Amino acid sequence: MKTAGVTARILFLVLLFVVAGCEPPQVGVKRIEPPPKADNDCNEASIYARYVPAKIHIMPLTEYTAVSNVVEEPGIKVYVSLLDSFGYQMKSPGVFRFELYEKVPRSAEPKGKRIDIWPDIDLTDVVENNNCWRDFLRAYEFSLPFDLEVSQSRILQATCLCPNGKRLSAEFTLPNTK
Image (cartoon, rainbow, N blue to C red; front, top):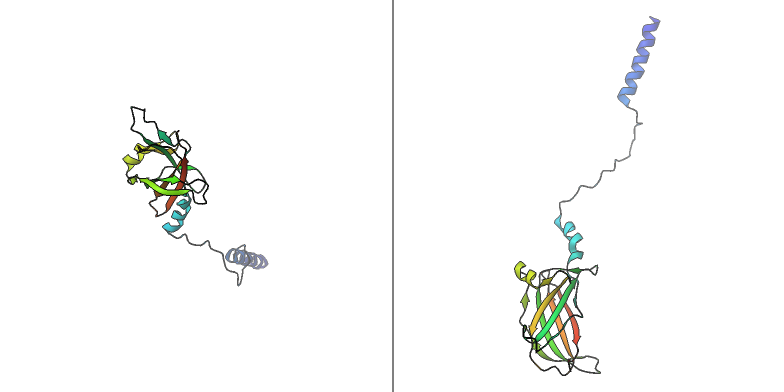
């Protein structure tokens, strides 16, 4: 009988440990759950917002094309690169506008009277975008017809109307050719 009582006590203690578990009871302590992941496209879109054009740059390769060149008509060959917020050149759809101004020497505002404005160049179409893109330069190439005699420096202004509504603009001084 004595062994049956000891065995019953041992079984009771084992059963008590099994039911209670190994972890001490935590009264008043809340478990921290990770926040539920929201299915919000805005958060994902904000990650890529830095990869849209942030700046436009007219490259120094931009120049007047020679009148004596039989292959091309006289004009201006313009090389434009779009830069993202990290400063890297990128390819992006957009509408490009080019304007040419007189350069006013020794002036706080060197951009004088507008000489010429070309029709907008729409590069939102993939085929047109690829036609103007020069991958080895990571820039766009445009040929603007222009047949006035160049006796003084001019200011070329390039504006890009981006699909996100941004308007980026840059200016470049074209030196006289005489």
